[in-house]
Image (cartoon, rainbow, N blue to C red; front, side, top):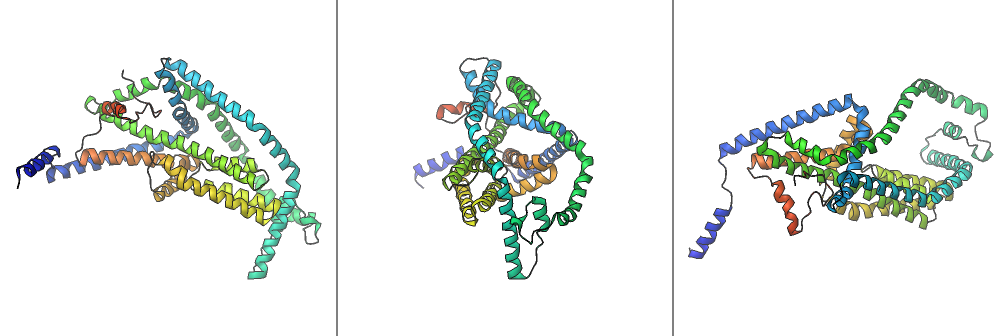
Length: 421
């Protein structure tokens, strides 16, 4: 073999890390397995504790979302020499001012469409009853299966155009008697419903205040948390926390950006085809898009129903087509670009995360299921890489210094970091 080839092979051998013995790899795999089991036990205990004190979950989750949204602005002010407390207050003023301007700009659209909906509701109610009757008759003619629609018509309060087949008032009273009894049975839960509404109101009020205090003291909170970690693992913990922060913060900001974009595109599309209440339906489509996989169908279904009730099946199909086009643009162009650098989860994993989260914690489980699974994935991969494969974790200082080569630090991305000066 030529000397140059031997030199190349020698240099490659020297640069590659030595392969660990089989016994050492088994030992590290065992340690990683026990570490993962311990982490799973800690997470399960934390979830159990949160379920016991779940009243604090809504304001805490909303506060974390606000922190991830506001912290990039605070960090930019801080880099310009403004004290962090003043920077946090200025950031709040900017965000609240932007939201106020948005509300003032959109208020005429919302007011006009709400007034128009109030005026059109009687005719929409009648059209809905007629469509339901027609669909039931069509099904009966084709399959011989009779679908009773009288109760639905009575609950809707429509008379199907005053036709002879419309149920009388006495008939409606008998048909809806059981429904009224069920409502009366639920009257005892009014206190529970009122407490739920009070909790929601408290969450909306307390979350911004909690987020403000946490944003101001965020560097000190991070230093205190890192102080709980043994010195040899402190850099590793900082690096791992930075990765988790990027994943969770990127998920929340990405979801809000995608929801806003989908809402704007849906409203524009519905307006182009002349759909009634196009702005309201587009806004609903954007808000419900925050619920992964399920939310997009809500806006499209609502557009189809409103289009069908107001202008016939043709307009309903056009609205469904607009919703389908918007979702295809979102699924193939917007969401992949926004989410590719955050959670990095397979769609099947996302679906299972939603089902598991909804089963454990209802709405909040659906909202937090995906970022929770993403965090668990990051922890598992980290422990596997470092404890089993024997690779060194990326030092936090080296990751921060990578900005010289163009990479973004957690601060540049708006993520909390350890301000150790």
